[in-house]
Image (cartoon, rainbow, N blue to C red; front, side, top):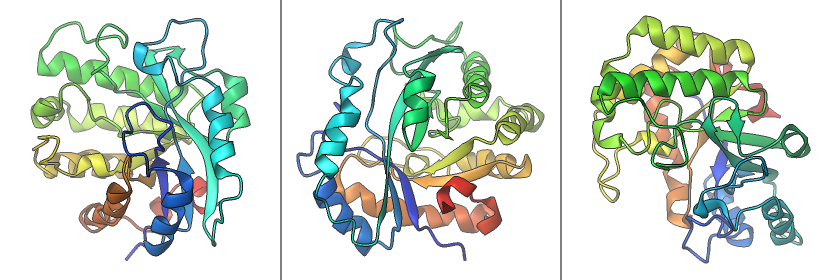
Length: 266
């Protein structure tokens, strides 16, 4: 079976949403080493586009985040783990991003979130609250993110944050054909799709949905020729260990080494 040997979505205490002071590279590296992770990507949240006023959440998370992360990495013993310095960038509407090309090109990779609809009043919202309109809005964002040339990886694809209590119903309104059309855009653009721990039900965050829903999404993405990477989206040392729970999707979707994006092997 395909082995999970990388994690390209790891936050540190530099992210405003991370309250665990232990979540720093010096503590993270030994944990992922024990998990058999050979490549790790740090993805603290960042806003670095002065053209748009950021949400309050992003005010302390400027371009200086990258400098601070590099300082935290200084002197850390990688112990055989290859370290990548990236970020999780925001998309507030098609064509409107929290990162500019020059900074994106200076990083090892960029994880782009195209479905942070929980940022109401900041990220463009669906025209109505119907499941169908939320789904269509989400796919519009997905396609724009796939085409933007800023992203290496699209974070938690087609996982509409802010509406996760309706995840099953929203995804059910999307036909296979509509999904395939959108996933073909990602495949042709060469962007990786993240297989995320967020796709697993989480009783702590009160996220309950059918696992058949993300399985359907990933199966159609595979059918369209998309390539994948794995990400824990960890904000705590404990969540890092959940990366191996994603083996469920390897088995269920039938993923092989050929389905993994070349970036994850570099």
